[in-house]
Image (cartoon, rainbow, N blue to C red; front, side):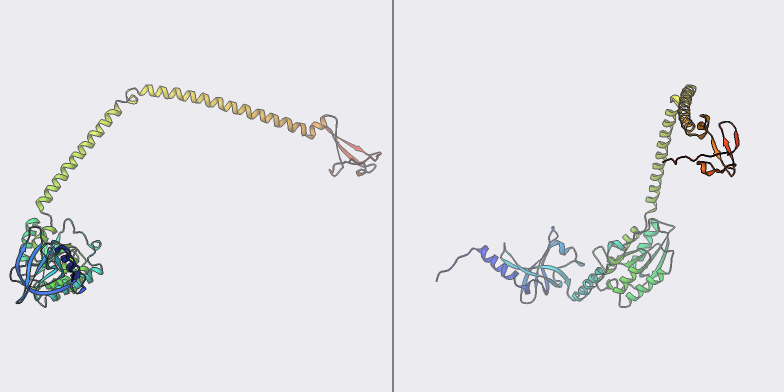
Length: 405
């Protein structure tokens, strides 16, 4: 029988494709114990996941590892989720880890991710709804345990940065089954103080179970509905809760929240002094510019020789007056000529001019003009209007004439 020989690379590639094409191995969850753990300087995590009978090599890349809320250690029982593939250079199959959780906390992480996705789809994490912090708050509310170290740290930092700041503490339970309702009540109590500029809600570090009250949906919605800006300060820098995502600002620790909430008084003093210096310099520059402008104006010709300017304006006024008089005379002469032409035309058409040539106007006694001889009876008086004066005549005879065409 003929055997087809292939290279090691071809065999490994074929096995890799075979594994990666199996959808059952695309997303698997495995429970085991960490062994041979290595945190590489690149940020990648390398370890072996084992139980009593077998083991598998695992790698968690930096992009996934930086989301971890805990530090994996040798011998820790964990649950992992990822995909199976082959690392061709070593020819070993291994698990590429996407999620890593301490054993027994898998359900909590699933609940966390489920609520996170739900609230994110509703827009509660949208940066557009985040409110900016007031630059100079006068009154701050603290919602945390009244007996914890976090409240002492926050008060100490706030007092150091702003000695005259008003601080209101709204005590609440921050862990345990009753913690969510206690946090909600504290938020409601704080919401009744209209003079509050912002609040800080949080607690010190702890395990996932101890921080779980800040992953409660009711607490998250109460934070989102709070009328003033909210800073969430839960746990340590690597701890993330739903409250952090829904708040207007997330602080890595309660102490950092106090520093973010209130600018240090000394820094404000230096800022005011710098603003004062810049203002003084700006005013000085303004005075210098205006002084130069005034000097340039006072040295201009109109101020140095005001009489010459007036004489020039007087000469221009005389020239303008003469020009205006000439224009008026020219306009009057033109209009007079037009007037005389119109008068001449009117005289030509006037009936008085006709009378001057020897004609007369005949009228009956009632004033009607006489145009034909048959309009007058024998013996009837008629009036003749001459160029100068009038005559009254009696008709002694009449002679009919031809009608004009």
